[in-house]
Image (cartoon, rainbow, N blue to C red; front, side, top):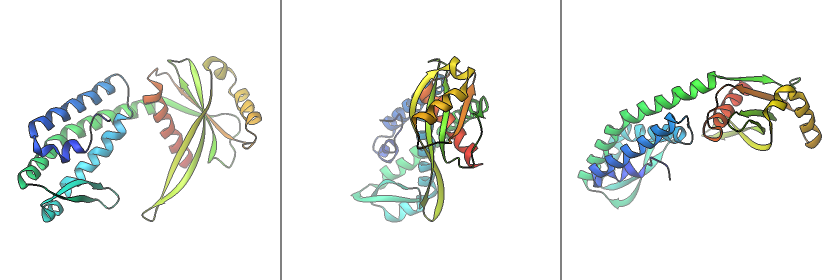
Length: 237
């Protein structure tokens, strides 16, 4: 369960004070995570939920036109609210909108804090090519440092193209192949690339990248997700 969930807002009109307490508690949990240099999953959840709440406010007239049905969620692709047949009293609906309007400025501020931290980590992370870079770069390897663990995590990545609502999007999936001592990889990253070629013959000439940073932030919550997004931007630029 995340620190903040849509139901806290859509059902919060039944007890406004209790809902505000739960939402404040959730935001404080996220803020503590940021202060401990832990970005994910909190930042991703916060960005998505903020977008949903903004859509709810923007579509208030749509909601008013279907009362007394109960709001259940948001179709983000169509920017529309979704409802079920459960009746909702007008007082609860108004309190829900009051709750969303109250929370949004705080959530936007917290989102800005997380995004600023993301940008800081990204700007303090370098990406270099290991060996020669092939023409085909949609599959390959990335060496991502974990200074707390004193290792490089070796990821195999694959870029994929998918379509939604007649628009094309790029996505990247990764799997961890192995970990290796950080000093050894620094000394000869090409040797590790040659080992990967021998062990994974389906990629005889892989695009291979090494990420570098001086930050010893948590790997799973911060370094890895930032590195993956930085690599994807590099590949599609």
